Image 1 (cartoon, rainbow, N blue to C red):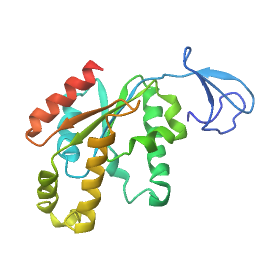
Image 2 (image 1 turned 90 degrees about the vertical axis):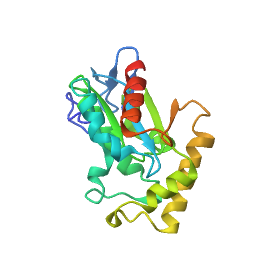
Image 3 (image 1 turned 90 degrees about the horizontal axis):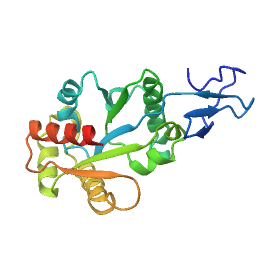
Image 4 (image 1 turned 60 degrees about the vertical axis):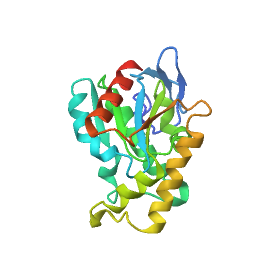
Length: 206
């Protein structure tokens, strides 16, 4: 609904945004219209760090205040292209979150979204800010978690484990640098409830 101009009816993602007034301007007719601009929360991290484990309970803990969505629910149903670093898939999730925000409630996305890809997406402009919470853990713990997963998750191959170890290290080595607002949450010694409590506190304090 949002990307169609209510004045001229033309479609555009890349509207000019006035942050002070939360106004989007159509690039075709120049008309502006206000929208609800809220922060987006992204809980990310490598497979095996605990995102799927906490997602359902996190939704209950934040019920009525935030909408928690796991980005894996469209995996395999919507085309995701590794050649564009999954930018089209990521942008779709940002579009969904942006439209939900028009109801006045913030969205928390749980999934292995890559912060630089999020920042490059056209839909990112419609959030007041993107707050990243990255779950991490020690290499040996991550390896053990992936090896003990059910077979249907296809996470025990050496290639997959190595990719996840590399992704995990990216957050540990690069995630705290720059201006991406990435907060690291080490789940190595946390149980599920401790992780949820930590995440809830970080979200509510932001």
